[in-house]
Length: 267
Ligand code: NAD
Image 1 (cartoon, rainbow, N blue to C red):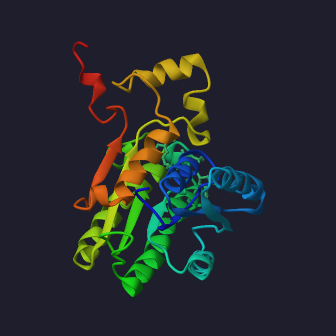
Image 2: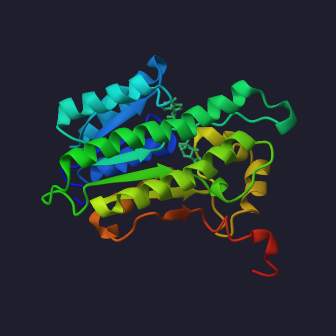
């Protein structure tokens, strides 16, 4: 029970990576907030919470579009009202809206930057306010609070046709490092997880046919597509005191995708 009694908000947790992070954190003893953006995601969020409760876990569901400041503030208020505080934020919500660069509209650009980058800023700011108010609760953790940003291998790998997405992930890297630097002295730890190719709805085109999957695997030295649990387990470790000396770090969970596999001459 590495996260016993800690309160964790996981944004965008009604599917994919966020769902697995919520399930893994609940299994580690955290009380989880399952966030979904729009009314139509409510049933999925409730189903995930029901599954967590059936295994003895605790949590609530919370509708919030992370790109909307008033909704983010309301999500933190209702979490604090229900559980008394917040100990862990997993800034996971993210979208892709792809387009060749010359045709990318401002709407497509803003849609991605508003959710992937501004959303992470808004949630991190509200989390930091609560961490500063509460300080260290030694019964729960060595740190006064933990933030995990869900970035991507595309914070370092340029990605043609996805300028808005890659830019948002590059931005997350310096947002994460800057907050980590600003608050390390106040015992707040801030890190990123950079997933490679994980089998979720966001990248269905990359794995749903054999051809697509074979082509994807040429980019992954470890020769398998990642599963949401690969990220869920890493998130539990980064949120726990086992990683107490880690802050300002990007943890690449990518089967070696960032190892320039195109340069392999054998093996
Ligand atoms: P996903 O589509 O299953 O999950 C994205 C989640 O974000 C969904 O639950 C969605 O409802 C939520 N969301 C979208 N807009 C939102 C908003 N405005 N407010 C709140 N929630 C919102 O895909 P995923 O792969 O699980 O993606 C999760 C995160 O992991 C994203 O940040 C993504 O960029 C990142 N990531 C995924 C991969 C991958 O290969 N799957 C790789 C690198 C990074």
